Structure formats: C-alpha cells, structure tokens
Length: 351
Ligand SMILES: [Zn+2]
Image 1 (cartoon, rainbow, N blue to C red):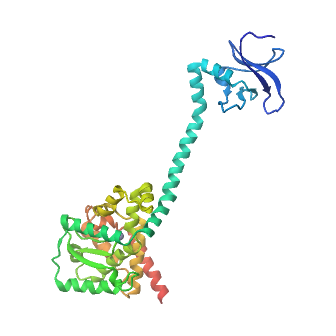
Image 2 (image 1 turned 90 degrees about the vertical axis):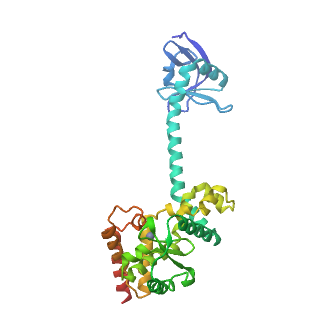
Image 3 (image 1 turned 180 degrees about the vertical axis):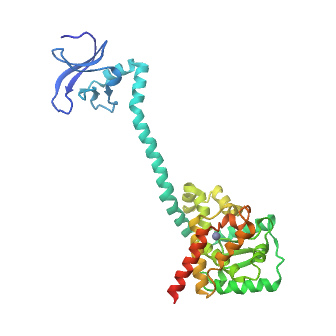
C-alpha cells in the first residue's frame, strides 16, 4: 500500500464535514495529490487543479481541500508555499480560477455601490447643497446667464409698451401670490431670435419671455400668464439649482458643501451658459405645471390656459423646432391631460 511519490508536508486529515482528525501526510505522485495515513493508506486523492489550497494568512494552518470535501491541514506553511511555487504556471491558472468568482463578486459589489451612491447619495447631497447655497450664488449665475444670452441670442424687445404692460399687470396678480412675492421676480421682454417663442426662469427669479411667444399667444394674455406661472414654479422649486448641482456630481457637491469651491465648481456656477444647456426632467416639468395651475386658481385666473398654449405651440411649430420652448417643455398629450385634470380637481375642491 506504500505509495511512491514526493512528500509535501505532514499534518492532519479531516473527513468531509467531520471534526475527526487523522495524522496524515500530503504527497504528490503521477496521479496527483494524495493524503496518506501513517500506514501509507490513501485517505483522499485529486489532481492538482482540483485541490483547493487556502491562502497563507500569518501562522494560520493551511488547508488543502480535496474534491471529496475532505481536508488536509498543516502548520508547515513554508512547505506548502515551496510546493505551490514549484507548480509555476499551473499554479497561476489554478489561483486565477479560484480567484475569478471572488473577482466577479467584487465587481458586482462595486457597481451596486455606484448605483446606490447615484440613487441615494447624489439626491441627498443636492438637497444639502441647495440648503447651504448662499443667495449670492443664484444671483451670480442668473446675471451671467442673462448677460451671455443678451450677447449671443437675445435682442431688445420690439413689443409695444401697452402690450408689455398688460402682461406685466397679469404677471403681478400671480407673482403677488407666490412664496417670494412680487418683489422676488423681475420680468424681462426680449426678442428671442434663434430661440424663437420661449420663456424661461433663472434661479434668482429673473424671468424672460420672448416677443415671439407673445406674438404667438396673440390676444390671449391668459396663456402667457399661465406660462409665467409655470416658470415661477421652476424658481420656487429651485429646479435649475438642483439640475446644476446634479451635474456637479458627488465630488463637486462634497467640495461645495465643505465650502471649498474648486475651479471646476466655480466654472459650473459662474458660467451661466451651463444653465441654457440643461433641460428639466419630466418630473420637474410636471411639478411646475401643477404649480402653475395652483397659482392661476389662487389668482382666479384660467388654470387651463397653459394647456391651450401647448396645443397652440404644437400646431404652429410642429415637432421640428428643436431650439424652441418645445424642446425644454415637451407638450405631450399626457401633460396637457394632467394639467386639465389637476385644474378640474382644484376647482371642484374650491366649490
Ligand atoms: Zn418648464
């Protein structure tokens, strides 16, 4: 029963799932690895690639697990290292195959962690950043944005003074009822040029409405007031700040909250042009729509005028106008329906 082969180490052998231990030695012969008892009888056997060696951790006894689940255990770590080293390339492949499931698990855990940060940490950091933003920041952002736009696309308004006044009067009735009050907003008229019929709000309460939008609405001032109420919604819900902060990412947000405004974040905040390339999420649009409806109802104006305006926009501009208000404010049928439904619900409640 004595087996020829090379001795690797002396230790103990444990049958699979048992704490019983048998004095044993580990050898290698032409068939592979074997654990033999003191009489030289075979306790377990397996080809090298099928035997799993535990990694070396300090003086903790090393284990070699045989395919049948039984274990050979030894305190002679050096002997095991010498043996594994001698296996060279075979050893490497063996190690790799053993490592691969762990590597996949590690990659999955990393990806999952990234997803969690994106889903939970970023929104939380954005909220903190909005809270700690000093009022000067939206002012700087807004001023530089308007300055950039005036230099590049916008032109002086050509609207008649009476037309402007009528819209200002209508706007005052809703701005007065907003959280910021009438003083929280400045309404500006501009010729839109390339951006056509459009209206937008800057985070400090600066609103811009283009001549083209006013002309499109014709005599229906109510529509324009409805659109402005929607823009007030974007300001009060701080949509553009949130949007910008989301773009700043985790690192930028942490730096900003920590008061360390790095050059990258400064660029984001000061280069107002960034504001123009951002479009609001569908959820933000729906929120601003509801805000518009609420404000219009409060002011005893027509809350459905904005839905009428989206209808008109689509009829007049079609889908091809990608620089228009439609690209940032997609007037889908669902959106119009949501506006009408909400207006109906609020009215029913009011009566
Ligand atoms: Zn909007």
